[in-house]
Length: 460
Image (cartoon, rainbow, N blue to C red; front, side, top):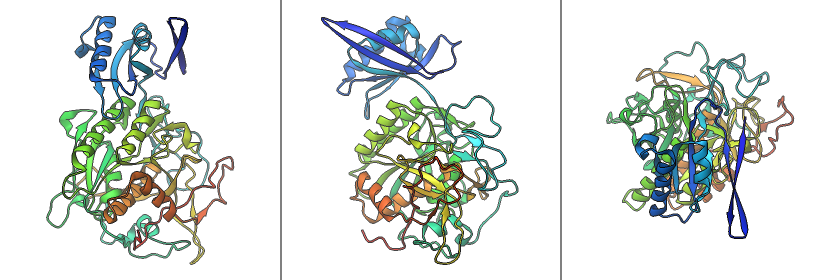
């Protein structure tokens, strides 16, 4: 249950009230993790002052409380605190607000709808999962019977074919992108990447998938995948067979563990890291772009959304998955941030030549916070369990990297584009051949949703 605590401070004749939202349901633990956001103009001296106040209040050294801080995007201190300390720290003049750290998920769903786009979604997190679920779903499980399968032809990938097709066209054909995304740095914030998979290797045998330099789960693992979700998403962005931008750089930033979960604090810290890397690289010879792809989400978080928007303000295009709850995408983070490109999902198109339409996936989140929809149904991409295998997954998790790949193509064509210009270009290029007639949840606002289109020629 969400609990709001208000701390009022008497300052001379005025009263100032601050609040923090506690979304942590583990009430048996006296100390919980919090995100302490300082005022925008806070200095490093003030950050250290807040940490010192925490040490005094908790009677512990910062090392004992797992205290961390970031500064590039937002001045934030992360720490484990007792409720009494939260009230004391919230009253400090340097502090803007405090949030409880929240879980963030890549949530697999298994159930009757995993093999078909018909039927209703029985709930926000239908299927069998261990533990409680307080966040959106971001992918469904792979269909049974796909197994490890090599592909010799790109035409086997319906998702690449349709992304390359104009309005109402669904004939099979070869994927013909305008370029291959060379030079675009795509940071995949996920469960990691299997760097040794053949789909990431060029003719020289070298992998374009590399460690991005930050692992929020276990730094000794260097961003390696132990779940599969991240590798699959990376393949859609830039795999030789699976990918939209077949020569983009794929940089693993692991923020989700082997079970597919992480924390808001870990992701905010990762976004701050990406911001510093972009700042260090943007003026180097050969630099093209920094792009973030996040197929994940959780409860709405002000600090998460602000970190995303501030990163976009630094020049990094951020692409996110809208979630699979079949609900309003504005109710979760990071999809509700605003300056990101938030992506819903559509299924394989149906219809005759010249009248082809793409049905919106039953699970896809919707509303004004969705900017574009992309293929998200039975998408064939990298299987992390072997270095040559492929598998199928469904979800907005799969739709998001299609758009991240499209951003890489746009930036490879014109690296002067700002994130806002890229977002508008993605929206302007999208086509309205979306089938909304079969929507079994008429309450959904899907009127805005248009399909991703990557033309063979980019007339920028």
